[in-house]
Image 1: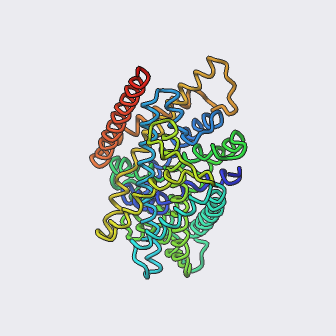
Image 2 (image 1 turned 45 degrees about the horizontal axis):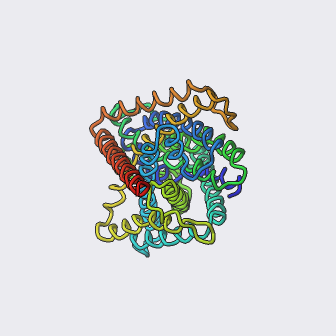
Image 3 (image 1 turned 90 degrees about the horizontal axis):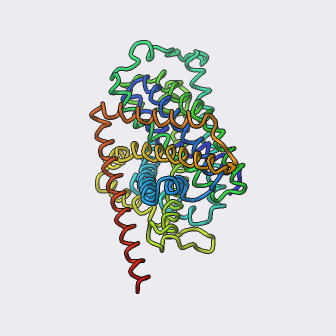
Length: 445
């Protein structure tokens, strides 16, 4: 993969279902106060990406944070993080295929949602089987389109709020001044987990570093985009949406189209919906790449069945790609059986799983950086403000968990995530014990 492709993947990897669909759900939950949720989650992911950048530059590996957790905390921790992230992406892939299909159906109601979802899954399975070079170029142009569309949206939104559009009254900031937090702290807590889902996928850059030319330089370049990407794309877009559309608006189901319809720009709503479809498919493409490389890395390290590490002539882990798309195809069939019920259920399954992965990255960096400093190991990229910023990130993570447990809605998701983590950890520990016992028995024989 070329450095320019990794940089654009860093810009566009998280611009998907979370932003184009989840931003509306966040505003419905918290009103304009959703900006607080975005600022908190945005600060956390910036710190996580700085930590991951340091580790990825020193050790580019397809297992990324799973490998770093293993080096820092042992094999069970590494395997648990790897499997948790893989399961999270498998669900996200299915959600993005269904989300893209549902959006496309609103402007082109010809092929049913379940069939469109199957087509998208088949198409991007083929793209990922074609080799990392083709995948990188595909993602490069997808990311450029997404970035250009959001910048255009921000320009139109600013003109609408400033009253520069002819014959279109400006809504001003009345949504902020009249009812900033209609659901109080509970709404902000609920929205926080929707927002965290939106930022999920940013960490794929650390996975892709292993297949990028000059990874040390490429990772540093991609990490530098994180701060302004979050400020411009996420905070900017959500500010415009929250200012234009009240939290009770039905248009929040497709928030970007709702803003452009309010601006009375002919055809703009349909156009941005098509861009959102492209954005979702781009994120699906990147997440499928990340999921297949993670399970491939687990297989290489003996934490998954060995056959998943087999490569074809294009050096693509074919079976790892295949198991990573299976749930997406199943979700399309379930959509046929239970229309309009599968996508909301999928959104509920992920969100807080990101927090566990990000927390493991911060803890791993804290341990590995101190180990490197103690041993005098030179690091090609060093996170500034260490250890203060890493500890601040962990404190912020603890605060998010505390706020989450205070809300009945988000506490259910947190408890289910912790139960899932405990189950995966137990399975990984038992699997490691069985493997060691078998190896010892063979050696004694």
